[in-house]
Image (tube, rainbow, N blue to C red; front, side, top):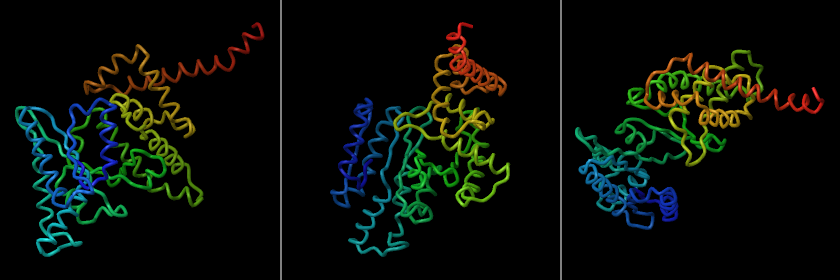
Length: 319
């Protein structure tokens, strides 16, 4: 659902879906910025009607509303034409009812079929307490807040761990990831608190230095390449590696190289085949098994390192 977007942006999304062979099971309903306010207001309701049709056929439907801020603006224009009194921030008082009527049509049927709504809301100067963001947040089951500052620093997806919350919580998570996510949020929250002190040049104690070191490694590990999401089993592997201190001695610049090498070793090693099956089936894996496998990985690469630097010297010297 493209509401008030530029035609070029909609065309770019359609091209991306076509290149990745996804357009055959995707419907794009677009009321672009050049269309009237009435069309922009009605467009998401027509989109969810199409989604409900496929839900009735027993299919899983995902509707992305991009974005509901422009939908609220179009509703405000219609309300002003109808001489309705403006309310908070110039929006009519029933704009909450308009969005709740739209988003609460998302459902999961008992037999088969579901509609999942993913609304996107544009914030002005990252103001999460504005009228439309708070309205949509109160209707939905959670929020993913993206920060411009993180995006500019190259941390992408630029998800803010402090402002992003889920009402569903850990009930929908993988069992192993559920155990890792708690300590991950704690580590990142502590890192965000003391990150500013490093820019001021203060003298830090050893515990704070350790906290900043690990927090910077975790932040770098969460960066993903565009259109290349990391599978669940690999997420568990590198999060376990970072949270248990296996990267504390490594320079920050080498973390992406380590991640690529670890995934390559994980994909091509026979000993990881049973582990991959366990992780993907959401079964609990003993911590010692992961620890032994990661230590084995370091041992293999240490032998390769020693051979690369010293083995050639022995060969050339005739020893």
